[in-house]
Amino acid sequence: MSIVIEPYANGLKGIINVPGDKSISHRAVMFGSIAKGKTEIKGFLNGEDCLSTISCMKQLGVDIIETDDSIVISGKGMNGLKEPSKVLDVGNSGTTIRLLSGILATQSFSSVLAGDDSIATRPMGRVTGPLKMMNAFIDGRNYGQLTPLTIRGGQLHGINYVSPVASAQVKSAILLAGLNAIGKTKVTEPYKSRDHTERMLKAFQVELNINESSVEIEGAQALTATNIHVPGDISSAAFMLVAGAITKESEITLENVGVNPTRTGIIDVLQKMGASIFVDHDDNATFEPTANITIKTSNLKGITIEGDLIPRLIDEIPAIAVLATQAEGKTIIKDAAELKVKETNRIDTMVDQLKSLGATIEATDDGMIIEGKSHLSGGTVDSFGDHRVGMAMALCSLIADEPVTILNSEAINVSYPGFFQDFTKLKTNS
Ligand code: SPQ
Image 1: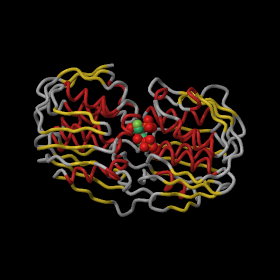
Image 2 (image 1 turned 135 degrees about the horizontal axis):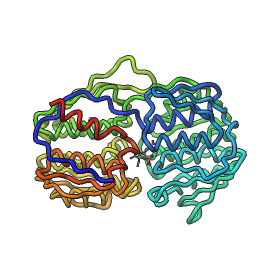
Image 3 (image 1 turned 60 degrees about the vertical axis):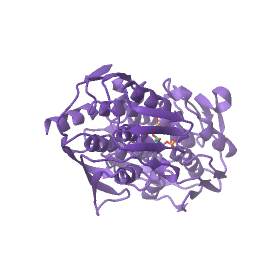
Image 4 (image 1 turned 135 degrees about the vertical axis):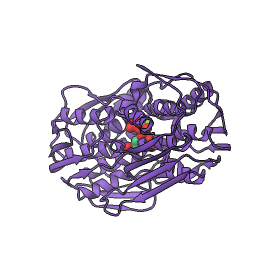
């Protein structure tokens, strides 16, 4: 499917509640499924990735009832899942396949996991490697590096794993396996990655020992069901924040956005670039902090984005790349080689697409350099099946002087099903 977005000259105005956090929604379904008791989830993201997680858990024998405003899970306990009779289809979702691998590695049955063409290219060795060190039996193409993955569950033992990458998916897969293993499991990362797994496991009454960049968990722990309120996804909010900052005469408020400090790099970047942004924290938030965020049209300046900031905004870099085209001077993004193994190679895809619209942007080995302010023309761009690239391209239509046509725009449903409705709402409110 393709969409043509006309250039837009007026301001963006209004209040938006972005959809639920994708990372938290996945975890709520998986943890609810292996907990004892009933878990009710409110604010769940009905995006394709999280629906893939629900469908996999149902195939594993979990009763999940989906209503208009909640998901109710009758948890099976850590060892109550059943062997799936078919391949577990994770669709486009890296989080589903990697976290589920950790859970399935300790089960008393076999399972096969596979996904779409993008998943077939994404590295699985980063998860299968440490799980094998725990005694897991996992195989896949290229010696377990690529999907489909075949997992024969069994008794695992804890490990002390020092991860070469800051990845919440790697950390979570190992911790989930460690939960049902013998002894202690410890994961250390070069920089702290998003900590939704740790926060939510605590809410499910699991004990963990958390330090700055390492987490320790004792094996043979049970999860106790709880109710989860999923906040709005800051990664989805990021697109609206950038939209407000780069479009003249705009003022947008985003309500109930998750502002877990491991995810708020986008706010730091907007502030450093000089954006007119105001964060109003909710003092009553539970296990994940939330805030209402207001952004206005801003005069921006280029900055360098690197180091421990990168894991705190890795999924926002496509939006930041567009933002940087409208900032005075140079924006340098480095230490972000992880972008190469996302739904697409997000360095190359973003650089190629933005260049085709007239931006001054170059790819580097571990990021990109963007020279602002660029004048963007219209034209035809492609999401290449990457939801975040698709939304970044929609932002370009706000500053381009001709229509922008986005090919494969349906990819956006992976994380932000109502994106174009919200985008239009902001325009019609002005
Ligand atoms: O689930 P998936 O496909 O990997 O989704 C992405 C995204 O852009 O939505 C990455 F492509 O988000 C990841 C994120 O990049 C979600 C995630 C999580 O929920 O644990 C962690 C990050 O990945 P990683 O590899 O750094 O752990």
